[in-house]
Amino acid sequence: MQLDKDLQSIQEVRDLIAQARQAQRALARMSQEQLDKITAAISVTGAEHARRLADMAVEETGFGRKEDKEIKNRFAALTLYDAIKDERTHGILAEDRERRVVDIGVPVGIVAGLVPSTNPTSTVIYKAMICMKAGNPIIFSPHPSAVNCITEAVNVVRRAAESAGAPAGAISCVATPTLEATQALMKHEHTRLILATGGSAMVKAAYSSGTPAIGVGAGNGPAYIHPTADVNQAVKRILDSKTFDNGTICASEQSIVVARDMEGAVTAALNAQGAHILSHQEQEKLSRFILRSNGTMNPAIVGKSVETLAKLAGLDHVPPSARVLVARETGVGRGYPYSSEKLGLILAYYVEQDEEAALRRCVELLEWEGAGHTFCIHAQDEQVVRRFAQEVPASRVLVNTAAALGGIGATTCLFPALTLGCGAVGGSSSSNNIGPLDLINIKRAAWGVRELEELRQGGAGAPYEAAGDAAMPGLEELIGQILRRLSV
Image 1 (cartoon, helix red, strand yellow):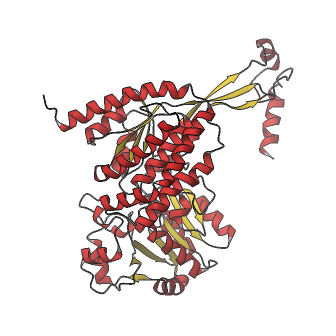
Image 2 (tube, one colour):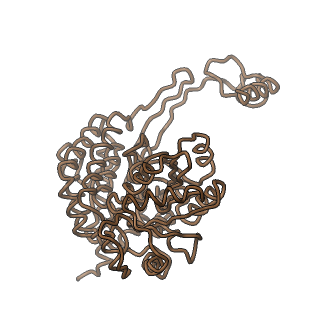
Image 3 (cartoon, one colour):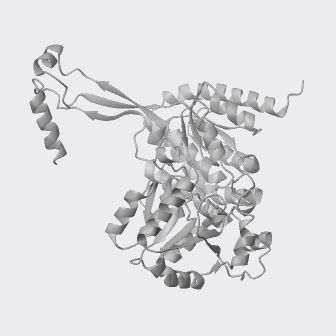
């Protein structure tokens, strides 16, 4: 009997999970050194195949630039490896001899890895590495429009891992990607965690699946240029960031926000550095192609060249040298398409009355779309930086850097990652740049250090004191300790 495609894909998921369960048992028995060897093998092989996989990704999806996707693949393979190679994820992680507590790292179990079409091959390398480092099998669910390059990337890292001792089934991929297969994978009783990178609908589905998930919401980060900034350098960083892989990194800037007294300098720098500021008529034409009728981003603009965007919208006067299309905007929300996430070479440009209004606009943009993700500020005044950092609803506040590369940890000292948590404000379970330590559970062995009689002798409450204290303080002394700690 010939099964329907959806039924066939569901059965495939069940088979992959059965294999992953066998692999999970083997990985759990491995030492830290064995897991490190597997991770290192993926790093080496991922770097070796970085350009070939980049070429495949662009040719299949039409998104981005081959040379930049190669950089992302090498970033995932090499920069990430350098950051995690000495991390302890397995066995005894820490021991507090004074308080008699031992932390023990254990794998979470089978991970469902959802892979987007914008960063397909680099995401595979990255997720495979952090899962193997943590001792977890991973089953990839590819985006249908990038299935070939994702499948090849999975095969590359799988062969490398198995050559270094990983069990069969530790890294696998759904060959027949369907919505039903992804749902079956996310909801399966033996799937322990979902790593969801992709569109907002998919991330919401991951969180509603009943399985613990780490998801990434939309990125809609504004870039604020303060009067103390080096304007030319700030604009250079913004345009370098936005043009990297044609804007497909979700941490890339989506808007430029300035106060009125900065408009002339910033506009001059944009024009001098290859930005094309749209006329009102051009802005109206392009605005029709940014979002689909349901309010989601139009894939026709994602990762495309300026030339392609101009042809799409019928813009006849965009110079061949234009690097980014910039649209002056005055509002945020429904009816203002430039205020939403645009994973392409399009920037909104907001000119506000003063610094206070600029701050309010940045908060408004993030609350509309992109809460918890990324905000960028260009300024030399550290007090201004600290004020904005405290006020904006973003998990990553990037200072004087290109946001696309700073957010993932390439031009900053943030943890190098291609899954960027948005925190509770963004509907995410974590605000971290996700790494192996997010993919383990920590057991704690704790020795008894007091007896019941000592608790009764001490009166109310149990202080957090070092092991070996003869008795707990009374209530008045305990309150005094708390007040002293608060005054430090």
